[in-house]
Image (cartoon, rainbow over all chains, first blue to last red; front, side):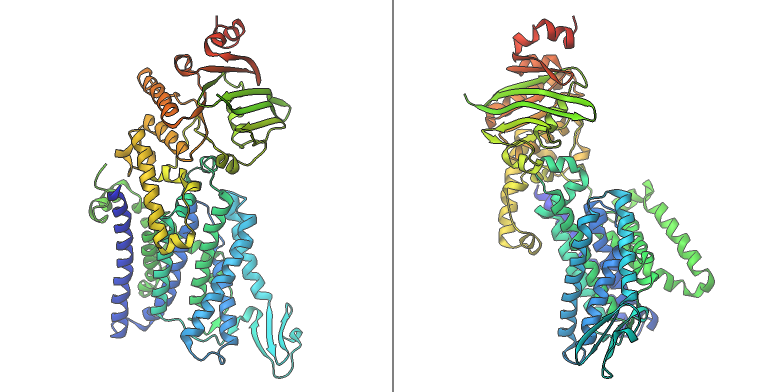
Length: 350
Length: 253
């Protein structure tokens, strides 16, 4: 029993250690100018993807339900927090305080969307759930694209047609400009903030898994009927996992939004393309394997950049590498090799 | 002795089929009761009705005088009915210890925040849960498998783990759905001893479905025979097994 507890504890510590070491290495490299500015610019998005992958793994791996609308929650977090930061740009001077408040808003709004969408969606299972979450993700993205919000001395104005329809006084400014999105968000995100958010996300997910609630969530994944017969409230725990996951995707959105001066919602950043990309991280890293999600997110984000020299063949090579990794990752020999050399004595007995 | 489970006129239809009709059952405290009958007679349906998987169209279920008719399975579990399944349903990816700890879910509480922040109450309650779960595993001789994945246990041990998990919910009534299915005569013998032991040790009332007549006649004190959803015979095990109707419908002449 003690041995078992130590095993999960040790595995978690290794995960934290990998993230900390990677952060220190990258931070040193970028501050001494040893890596290209392109790669430095990729560090914050990388943190975003890691948080997204870990949060989606909570739904896919721990709860066992396929969600394809994760980018939607990221979108909600990004726009609600960017909206706040733009409004408060001159009111709150301290960028840390402003970012923390924006983070709180992004997380809470994404969590609320998680509950609202989760209640109807979690009645479904498997493929059906996947399709409906995909649809919800697209709805969120498209809603943001038709929304115009402006502010003048009289207060906020809302419209769904165009800027003229806002009907503002001459002193008014447009905050959310439909498909043109939000411009002028303060660039408050840093690699350090991204790293801290990753650590917080990891802390929450790993501790949740090893608690009473986490066990209930995994019990539902393994056998709903048995979980119900034991008196587990299935709806409650499904919604809990889904909402926590949505809130974390919202946090990733906040980080993403405050790294860009112009925030727009398109298929690549908040549409199904992004949802699928996150799912690829999760599947490649191993469903339910949090550490794997992180490693897969890093490799697959950096790979296209490292392959930049191949210009036109870049995405082709990327796709081929993806296929090869998927095949070899789960080859019996590869699993054996990993257990022997990489699991740090994890699976020794039995 | 007093009555623990009192079922009156229980019935359910699926489409046009009357799966269970006018089903009556009275089980005394600490009794070992058997429910037998041919395949498709509605035995598992009765279990599903008792545990809230299905809602009955008619009739009443009283546990210790408390009306449980049409209640949800969560409430029924909290009221004190636990079960095992004909086809084993464990939490396969969880460890053996965690399977039992999930069973303890409704008896040991700490909040989600306490769990995530690892506050003192988390440590205290988790320690209690570990101790309680290990105690139960010891009863079933499973403590050495505590850190194994449930899916990796041998078949017989999986059956035992399912019973341990059901007992972790601290039930008044334990329902066993074909506990001896897939066991050889040796294992069945051990299982009989174990069921008797559970009854005596935990002062448990047990209702079981079984096809193995050796087990039924060996440990059940009273029997109900179900045929086409209706009660064919009910009473003391020896009387029921010698009933000509039962012999004709189920046992074979």
